[in-house]
Image 1 (cartoon, rainbow, N blue to C red):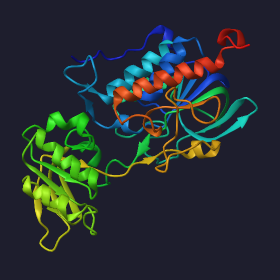
Image 2 (cartoon, helix red, strand yellow):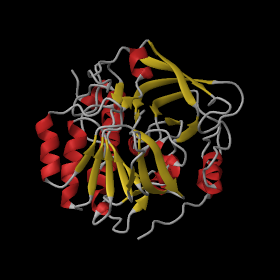
Image 3 (cartoon, rainbow, N blue to C red):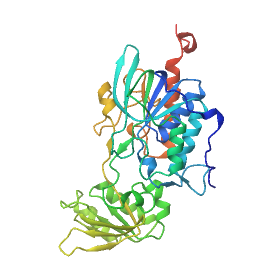
Image 4 (cartoon, helix red, strand yellow):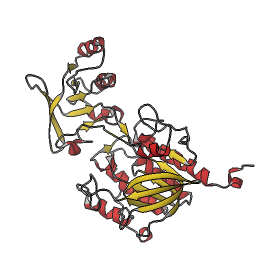
Length: 357
């Protein structure tokens, strides 16, 4: 089942970007878009600021309810724009440079993405033309001077980075033959030749868990220092038929989005044939704005939130991978974005509506 292509409609015409809004949402992934849709449905004025990141990869989500044939993440993004714009949300392509508390509101400065940056500023390289057209239609491309906005509430859906190493051809492989989440892509590994690159217990667990799907698994430390696990764990891998190489990866051979081999950084330049690769790496939360606001963070840098997505600062909510509550799943991000919108909407009610004395 393939979702329909979003098409422009008369009620989705370009309009001036607002300078005062009920809510600014930072991040245009599943969490941010879900928050924008649900804030808009509550008749709140919303500005979503998006830098584009993982949703430009050629990733297909097969575990989203209602899409038995899978749905491209890029498609979710475009449909999400249209959904949010339908309820009045404004969307802008830009970078939130600073945010500061201004009384009971927040003052946010939005700058252009830098020239030569990864996605902008006007025609992001590598994106389908229809994606750029949608961005322009929905006010996603700012013009003129940096924009300053005052918002009554703020939702941070800024995500994380660092899932994948940098190598030629990487972006085309992501979602096709290069993965990081077993829960998302494990089923697509059935009977495949799979390499796991990682040095810690998470990598060992991933390699062992893959045996549910395939008996052709190889683990590579991905660094010269080798593995950071007890020898007994490596012995368990060997007993289960999983070869473990305590070295780095010199080359990530691939062609047209298909991983073909891991060339090891050992004396003999061993070539490990693969059809798929899982990289198990520590991610880095995008938390510059959270730090500017003095939000509480976990030791790993994610934003600490309640079950209602509330941070330790009133009026500020967080959702998706940047927060610490759930795992990195599209379904979880959508839920968190909705929950953050519910929380932010509650803040915007007056005392009578909240039932406060």
